[in-house]
Each structure stands twice: as structure tokens, then as C-alpha cells.
Length: 250
Figure (cartoon, rainbow, N blue to C red):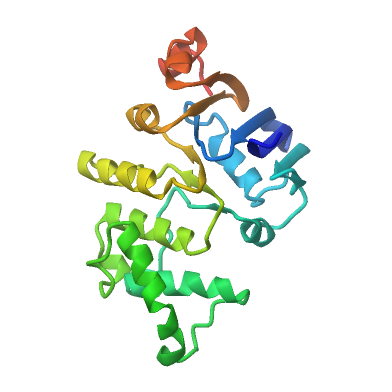
């Protein structure tokens, strides 16, 4: 299908007989913001790990832009344009915000991160790095150590380093986790700002964020797809209501 950028076919992952992801078939439309939600333990992060190849499926297939990526390594998938963030902020705390983004930009050369290269050589990345910091609202923070940034700004910095890889599709693992109301609003605004030209698949617990941002929502419970549709559809689904009220334990 031309409008589908990412597809899974009966994707399954077992751990010593326990089925964490059970026959999940997912279709993500190009240019959409698609949410993966569900109670704790529903299999959401395991799905992300399967999609980005940090885990291999026990059964099933994963297709990106029509190409079977089931057997590829994480770095190969990232080079194809499918890039993820993590639930826990992953930045280098003793480097500045600018240096964090600059290191990510080195991937454009198709080589490994070169920590030993001279400042003069690395300075050629500064303009693009500052542009990315500006895109995520951190134009004031280029010279600040990443470890000193408030939590919400660390998450924004992580998104900037992810964008440095120029992804066609971005997977965000709980981008607003642990944030206060103001930081949540900033991250939501940031996701809207970076959306043009990209597809976003996100795991998110904050249902008000999901309602305001997402075009399509897939609800997981016990590793299976429980419901799918827009927010109005899934929020009215009796089994979804039951799962979120705790009467169906994941």
C-alpha cells in the first residue's frame, strides 16, 4: 500500500514461553502521528524494540516502505530512516547541548562518532547543530552542559539528536513521561513543529496528549491489539474502558 510506511504482520515475541507480543499486525500511514497505548505491561515498549531491531521477533514480519526489515540490525534500520528515542533520556551529560547534537550529525558522514577529532574539524557541524537546537526550542542552551538541563529540556535535546539523523519516521517512547504540565505542553508543541515531512509513532501514557496529537491510536493489552481508530472511537470502546479501569490486567 503506497500510503503505508510501516507494517507488521503477525509480529510475535516470546520469552521462555511467555508471549509478550502476540500476533500484532500494525499499519502506520505515511505522514501520520500514530499512538501505541495500553496498560502497563501491555507490550508497547517490546513492540518498539522489535520495530527498531533491538529484539528479533519469534514469528512474523516487519516491513518499512515495503522492504522486509525483519532480519536487519538496529544501525541498518536507522540508516533506512527509522529512528527511535528512548523512555529514559539518553544524552551525554558532560557534553554541551551543542556537542551532543554535533556528535549525532557526524553520522551523516557514514562513520562512527569521532570523539578525537579536532574542534576545527567538528566546527563545520555547528551551524546545523544550532539550527536543530533552535527547532526544539533550545537555541539558548548550546553552551550548557546537557546534565544541567531541566528534565523537559533534556528530552527536547534527545529529540534534536534524533532529528540529526534525518529520520523519515520517528519512534518516540513516552516523550512526556515524568513531566509537569508546562513541559508536557512544550513537548507537544515540539512534536507538532517537527511533524511536517515525517511520520511519528509514539508510546504515550498521557491520554490528553494522545487525544490532542494523534491521528490513529492502537490499543494493546496482554500483547494483543485490543482496538484501533481515532481517539473518539477507541475511548468509547467498552474493552478499552475496562482495561484502563483495571478490570483487564496486562
